Image 1: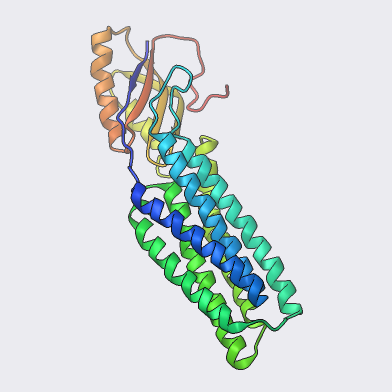
Image 2 (image 1 turned 135 degrees about the vertical axis):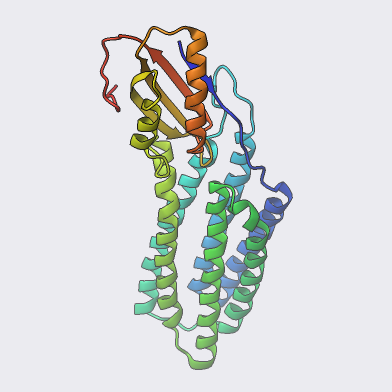
Length: 301
């Protein structure tokens, strides 16, 4: 006998805002590729590559958010709610790889600086800053509520910083002929990209691997439940996340007496109230009485 309890919470992202952002980033990516080829600026081409990663990130965010809203079926009992976490993993991992590529390219340019048409670099960098800053404003609200949109938001925010570095480099090249400064700035920004993306990458890995969420203290929750007078012990406990919002709790609960279903339901209501205090809205409790199973809190499968 078991009981399953759940409530649904899903944040709806703004399709209009993400659509506008995708179009803006496609335009700035194409413009920077053209500008980079004409000016001979590796910095602009690298920034274009970063902008292109923003386009991919945003398209994944839009697509997976739509997938997450699909209803559960007998083939997909949880629907596609993990699609957003998978996309966040891909986005952050991609950004780390791009950042490493930026560092390699920046070191190469630093060792062998070449003159470029700095005027074009300044104008295209300024345009990229304006477009990406507008995109950041459009997605700022959704980024607070959704891990996948936060990943896309960070893509855009760091691209603003990259474009600022390219702009500064363009100004220094134009007026002082310091052709190595943009490489140095690119390295610093790439390091920041790796640091910020790693947090999202690790968060998504923990969810995909069904690790116990940091905010959920398994021992404390289990101890509080086991203090109910009718419960002998609680074991075989699992706490995991389906996505960045929904916490799941599963456990075997051994009762002191051979109680009825009605009595179990009363105890279950108390357990649910305890779980709500820890923001756990999905639970699956298996009642037991004098079963010869392990009473360890965590059991190997």
